[in-house]
Amino acid sequence: MTPKSLFRKSCKPCRQRHLKCDQTKPKCTNCQKSRHDVRCYYEPKGFRFQRCVVLSEITHSAEPGKENSEEDDSGPAESSQSHQDNPTVDASQHGRIHTDGNDDIEEHDVARSESAPRHSPPVSADTRQASYSPGVSDDIASEHDVVVQPDVCQDHSLVGIPPRSNLPIPIALNEPSVSDLHHVHHVSQVSVTSEAFPSPSHLPLIPSSSLGLSGIANDTEAFILKYYLENAGPWLDIVSPTRFFGIHVPQLMIGEPALLSACLAYSSLVLHLHGQVSMQVKDELYERALRQFVPCIAVYREGDGPVHNIGPIHATTVILRMTEQFLELGQDRQHHLHGSSTLFETAHHDWSLLEDTQSSTSFWAYLRGSLRVSFLLEQPCPFELRYLSVWRYASKDPVLTDEARSNLMTYLLAEVCTLCWGDPAAEASTSKLDELRDAILQWREYLPPSFQPWYRNDDEGNVFPDIRFLAPWHCVAWQFYYTAEVMLAVHSSSLRREKNIFRLTRLLEERIAVPTRQLCGITMSINHPGVKMNGSHLVAWCAQFITAKAEQNEISNMLLDHWHDIKWPNLTCRDRLRGLWDGTREFWVEASERQASSWAQTSG
Image (cartoon, rainbow, N blue to C red; front, side):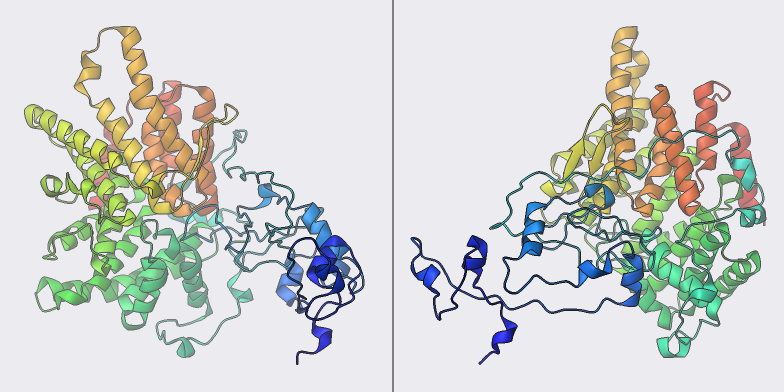
């Protein structure tokens, strides 16, 4: 028989009605006399867990005498009642909503980045605010978290949505510009105060031999790999529900030294830009990655390597490309960009929307990365596109996953870039533009409900709408969709032929300004660094047509904030926009910039 001490003295119906329970089994006297059929049962007492040291430090603002206190056994449970009377959660501090018996509903995507400290907010009667540490996940529920039961909750007020992190900030006179990054070694002088980049000497490390990664030589490399696993790797998983770069690539590292070195080179560059890793360490890791990677490519060029093992090589070249993408346009030599296109084209592989292989995931990640250069230089996609005739009707296929639909929109935007910025052939381009426009409209028409935003706020107080989606791949797909709309409108012959100034103004608003605002809203509403990286160049290119000062300031601040947060090279885009907006610049890409980019590719 279960000891009596494990149960509360009163049955639950008596405690709810504030009656004295005589504890008669199987039904107390009060329950027997009730007008309604009442289930008389006794709840076991809750176990007491000792708070760990780290969690205690995180929630140091909480009063220690209240956390472990339990309601009086003979009383009517004042502590529990206080939570029932105050079920509202302070949504301005976090993005989770507690419901009955369900897991926490995340504010954003499944594959979240941890570049910044994530909050694990306490919830109590006075909504006290705790301090946080970047090393603790918010998946660990605080003991202050309250799950509101439907049978006792009396307050049905809605929980507010937390504000976006990118808020308007005043522009300082001494802001950094692209000239600050003229030489990469200047970046190491930038001071960093973010807790997202702890000192390597303070990391508790495990000997690499016990991890099975013989390529980790010292504590510094362990610190760099840790940053890849927790931050830089997940940034790439914006269209990967299985978290290919964040989970599967680390598993492949054990047997792929070149892949491990590429991840270290990529992560060390980001840390170097934040002043956490020296230039010497960064350069050594990059050179080591190249030394190990070149023989792997040679094997496949000679036809000696098995095709089924080329997946890690594709992943390696995509990650090495990231070591170039974190440099401003004038410093990006694009060696791995063009090398990747050759490698993917000679892989004897027909890329499918339905495959979930290492090579396929790497290909789509490469294609998304190549679009950034296309928009910065207004040039066609470097990859040979030959699937439009096959994939233009793919949107109707009901078996397409959300990931496949996002990849399809990626491909359609690549086709738009190649058509608009490739060699102009008037007749062919006009007919293909119409074909692309139909395919893009059809893509939207057959989207499943999961692609619709779960929250939208078009309040006039917001410069751009606040739009939230279930997963990052939904955000990416809509980023590409609205960008394609703007590009098709800009290159539309109907706008060029329009002579009526009033009708032209209305068309510019509907076809260019409105999609641009949607694009900006989506990009600013999510805190996933990878999605912001994917959308920053799209926002910048489309924003050249924005004329409202408030919108211009908001976009400029977003680009600057993202540069401050993870050192994503937005300064070139920001400088271009400011020149276009104030009239000191005529075109998005000047002839001198094209020449400088070509020189950077051929030098070194």
